[in-house]
Amino acid sequence: MRKSLLFFFFLSFCVSAYAQQTLDKKINRIFAHSSLEDALYVLLDQDSIPLVFSNDLLPPKDIFVAFRHTPLREVL
Amino acid sequence: MPEIGVGVMIFAGMEHMWLTIIRRLKGSSSSGEDGPLPLQQEAERIWKAAGTYKNQAFKPDVDAGWARFKNRMQEEKEGRRTTIRFLPLASAAAGLLLLTAFAVWRFETRRPAPEWTVWSAQKTPLEKMALPDGSAVWLNRNSELRFVANLGKKGPRKLFLRGEAFFEVTPVPGRPFIVQTDQAQVEVLGTRFNLRAYPKDQATEVEVERGKVALLDPQSGQRLILEKNMRGWIHPGTGNGSAPVSLPEAQLWRTGVLACRGLTLGRIKTLLEQHDVATVEFSDLRLANCRVTGTIQARHIESSLGLLCQAAGLTLQPADAGSNTFRISGVPCKE
Image 1 (tube, rainbow over the protein chains, first blue to last red):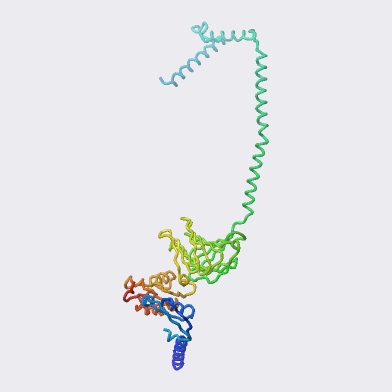
Image 2: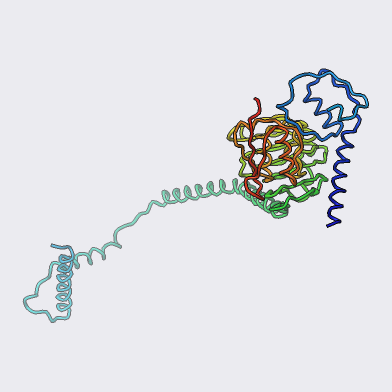
């Protein structure tokens, strides 16, 4: 029982640590006149950031934004 | 009177006459039978006439007979000459015919029948099988791939597929790689592509991951050129076509992963059901138009599909506990 609890806490810590690591990842990108959808695809494919979203809920606007060593949590 | 009766009467009359003649010659005839009988008289007349025949002069026309004989000889000779003139030609023709027949027979008997190699996957897919030319094949469940042993020595490398397979083709100059299905033919030079052609689908679908392939519809003669990240289909019922794909969609059966980039839930449903991962039902058919982005893991279908639905503000519930049928419900997305 004690071992199981220890394993559970270790797993939670790992998942949390992975999520924190991902959110702390630094992003260096410039999105000039690109749609939000395309910008998210770039983060998915080129920065290997696992994202899940509904394409229908994204605002149909072009964005112009530059990130320099910006943590992902701030980008999002 | 019937003819048989007449014949019997005549025969009976003649018998009586001959008996009379014999009796008279023996001298035992009765007095009433004296005097020559009509038939006896006639017989005596013929006998006498036959005796005088040899005395008549017989003068045959010898010259005319000789001429006829010569004519007949000449005709026979000419006939034989004609036969003799055509005899060598006929012999040569017959010889040639025999020689040809012999050559054909030898050719057919010496050429060995092609040996077929058949790979068949029933309940479990076959992973990365190496073809004799260095190409690799992944074969999905309930699929069969057939090809001539060693893929032949020259000419096109031809294979026959029933079911679904993923090909990683090694380019060989001058030897195109051709996969034949029930409805179509796919020709490539060197590429990675997925080919689906289950008999139950009555269609052939190709998705190109790398390189370029030609999808040919033998019935209409239409030729679709598919490049990287393109999907093409030959469907005798609904028609042929092609469309771009953002990421490989058809390899779920092989990789266990479906990367969705703005895929509709309807398309996700089709892919999950095509590859026997899960069955999806919608509470409202308009939900099939919702577009989502994310990754579906076949091994964790409930959690990964549930996450996508959650992002779209929808709810995913299993139809029954432990079953692979899921029901998606919620407010339809904007169109």
